Every structure is written in structure tokens, then in C-alpha cells.
Image (tube, rainbow, N blue to C red; front, side, top):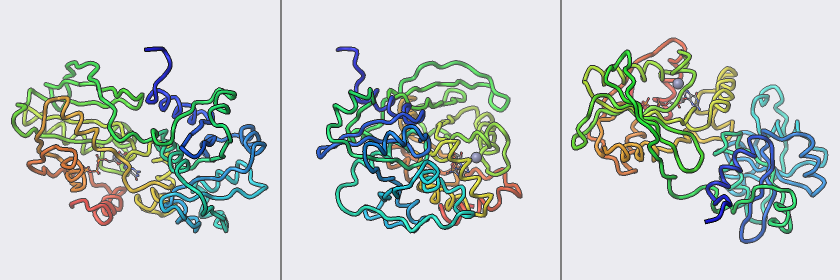
Length: 360
Ligand SMILES: Nc1nc2c(ncn2[C@@H]2O[C@H](COP(=O)(O)OP(=O)(O)OP(=O)(O)O)[C@@H](O)[C@H]2O)c(=O)[nH]1
Ligand SMILES: [Zn+2]
């Protein structure tokens, strides 16, 4: 084996490049395109791009709906850039922050002809980079030569969203006595693809042959660490650990999928839209995301690595049960976890019940 990065490593590079505002090149059977994140775009790179040709701004069908733009490709819309478009125009289409104060963002013309494969892959790459799901896409004649001349990361579009989950390696485990559960061990898992690490907190020494009391918790910096009253995550985290401590055993999987998988910056954008009157689901849609972008295969993989196949799941979310079951985990019982209602999160919890099927 040589030293050159493989496709998984090149994808990790691509995510990192995009977060810094560096373009990447995507290829398909029919050609290739240079791709830039709308969120990290600067004037210098936009001018360089416009000198090459006229790019389109790829946005999701969700964002297109808000902007009243036609998404001919269903989940993706290819917005034609007006000739005088600048960084501010790109930002205003990608970011809903000023939708209410600047409602006249159209009419927007969208492309209908040709394939949207590269655009769809570009958006998937933005989501994986935890950026706004919007990308400038400009076809280039000889993509490989272009990438090589400009020293850009190049990846085939079909490899952007791999089918399988990247293997997770257990890096280290150690004892960490907790206030709520003294006999605790923290396990650190690291994926091969350079994405976030995930954690498992094992309480006691649960029998691997019996269903284990389990909480599948998604990271919430605001709720878990800051004690935010806008959600119920902090109290749920504590209650789960307390219950496991009292039972003497259990396993809490802490998945670093902040903001239901959109990342903290995007979650704060969603909070800002909630300040303008939108609910948690509407805010995600206006940003261009689905209601829930989490990957629950991670939870199933962690359980598998720890040797568990059956769980008593602490949740109020039936979709979590369905998605975990779909990944081969047997959920023998749902253990309700109803704590932490405040006057600030009452509406959030009611919306989860109404729109996401959470049980009250
Ligand atoms: N996008 C977005 N994410 C949010 C918002 N409020 C909380 N979150 C995230 O939602 C996730 C909550 O995860 P969980 O509590 O594990 O899951 P759940 O689907 O509510 O189901 P339960 O098991 O019943 O708690 C965390 O990742 C939070 O960061 C919001 O308004 N918008
Ligand atoms: Zn939360």
C-alpha cells in the first residue's frame, strides 16, 4: 500500500476543505464540477468561479419550498444565479435568517434539463460537513486535470454517501464514578471515516444475554451542558443515569449528533428562526433540512460492539424504536422518560408530540 489517501480519507478532507471555504471537485460518469459551500463562500473565490462560467446554487427541495422555487429534481433545486449575483445573494438564498425581513427573494429561476446527480451529492456533502445545505456547482470540462492544477480534493459523487456505516473502533475504556451512578465506565468509539467520536457509558456489569436498560441520547450542548430550558435533554440525561444508577446497571449511548444531526451552528440557526415564531420542525425545513437527520445505525453499531442485542429503551419517541429495530436491535420494552417540562419547552414538547409522534 502506498501513502495516498483512499476514498474515505479524501471525503474527510473534502468536508474539512468545505468548512474552510476551499472548493472541492465532484465527478460523475458524465463529467465533473467544482463545488463550493454557500455558507463559507468568500468574494475572492466567487469571482474566480464566475470567471470560469455561470454556476448554479443547489438547494434542497425543503428550502426551495420556502423560497417558492420549483424543485424539478424533487429533493434538489438548481437555482440559476442572476448575472449580478454576489456573496450576499448566495447567503440570502442559502440562509433563512432574513426571510421575514427581506421576503422578496424571488422569483427564482431553476434548471430543469440535465442531471442533478452532482448537485444532490454536493448537498449531501454540505450536510455531512454540518454546513448549510446549499452549494455552488459549476461543471468543468476536464475535472481531474482541473483538480490537479488547482490542488483540490476530488471525489466521485457516488462515493459521497457510502451505503454502509464506517467501522467504529473502541479506542479506550475507563472507570468514571458519577454522581448519579457510581459504577460507571466510559467507552470511547472512533469511526474510521474521520467523523465525530461517540461515547457509551456503561453502568455496572449488565448481563449480555438479557435485555439491557438503555438510553440512546443525542448530543445537546445547550441542554446537556448549559442547562437550557428550551428542551428536555439535560433532565432526560440525568434521569436516565439516575435510573441506571438505582437499578445498578444500564448503558447510555451518547451519540454526537447535535441538533438531531444538523450540528450546533445549524441548531442555533433553527433556534433563531424559533425566536421569529417558527416551531422546531418548521425551522429545520426552512433551513433546508428534514425533521430529523440522525443516523441511528450508530446506536445499533455501538450496542453491537459492546455485545448487546436486546434493549429496554428509555424514550418517548416511537420512531427511535422503529429505527433501532430496523437496524437489528430487539427492543423488548419502552421505558418512558418524561421529565424536565418547563414553561419554555412546553411548545417544543407539544410540537414533538403533534408532528414527530412523541408520546406524552
Ligand atoms: N434541529 C433541532 N434539534 C433540536 C432542537 N431541540 C433539541 N434538538 C436536538 O434534538 C435531539 C434530542 O434528542 P433525544 O432527546 O435523544 O431524542 P428524541 O427524539 O427527543 O427522543 P426521546 O428519546 O424521547 O428523548 C438532540 O440532538 C438536540 O440537540 C431544535 O429545536 N432543533
Ligand atoms: Zn436539547
